[in-house]
Image (cartoon, rainbow, N blue to C red; front, top):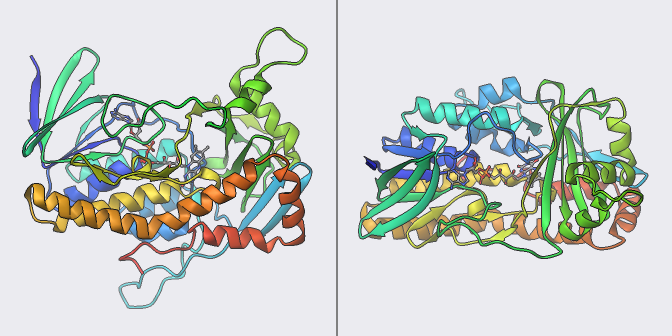
Length: 411
Ligand SMILES: Cc1cc2nc3c(=O)[nH]c(=O)nc-3n(C[C@H](O)[C@H](O)[C@H](O)COP(=O)(O)OP(=O)(O)OC[C@H]3O[C@@H](n4cnc5c(N)ncnc54)[C@H](O)[C@@H]3O)c2cc1C
């Protein structure tokens, strides 16, 4: 027999975007359900760096103290590792925090830090649970059916099926996996597709306050010191380059994708080789993708989208978690003050889409331009030459990517 459950909102996906919407709506008295297919804690392909501009929002979500207690060191320098080039420049400082209770502006949190997604996503989901959100996990959303005012999400756990009903449906399932939901993207298969890879290491010699951008033939990436002495290294690499690297020149067999990527990084970025020389892998390499950078609709067919499902910047600027948290917050604020019914959802959808574009469009286009340069043949050489002569370009790039842009409502 199929079980039924009724809510004010159903959120599909418990990444930072989904949990932010769920938590914010639940604190405003909504009956919210989250559906998450994976068991937590889970590792995730992600560089795990979070800009300091989000701290006021994390304070509002009441998880900032836990984030501060767990995250890695402050990242005060940005760098470029490409070939034998290792250049660095100051990271721009985020604007001061919101006024403290006595009216003074706090000077804390000027710089971003990195926290493993196995920890960060659990903090957010635990906060949502404490706020009364009903969590269906591990459960996969497999269909959304619409019938006038009622919308149904069919969820599956093993052989068991359940129907959840609510007027508001939020797609927060990310963008890297195709699937049957109307909000999920179709498959792609182009030589230029980018696959994401990520690994953790311990015992690295990377300076703890430095986050270098890695530029290498066929891809780009980054390294950062995260929580508990872990180094997080992540990158994107073109499908055609990956296929070429996996063909071992002297052996009949193919290399694994992880082995091919890790060798390529070490051989084409000397800074990576040096940083990992005496480091130990902490868990296997993870892969995901292809990634789907671009701007999508924020509200379509009566389904709201947040995080990567709404739009995604190339990870070259490490702003995806910021966009996930902030878009979740923007949507929850619009939903909470919109009138009820279909007309109210239309209004919330229009206002949310406008707010999304004004906050994120420049970041998405800037990231696409930077990624385009990093991925063009021969770019590594001339990018390294420019940055060696003008290291300030790195500081400017970090500023343009939105790292210091305050979240509306928290200025
Ligand atoms: C190589 C790389 C490095 C990156 N580095 C950084 C960085 O340093 N800093 C940064 O800010 N961003 C970074 N990003 C981007 C960042 O990881 C994403 O933008 C962010 O995770 C998006 O959050 P989200 O909540 O939208 O989706 P996700 O984090 O992808 O969460 C979606 C959730 O939905 C669940 N789900 C999916 N389908 C279903 C379903 N049908 N039913 C139920 N649950 C479902 C998934 O299991 C998942 O838990 C990086 C990305 C890549 C590829």
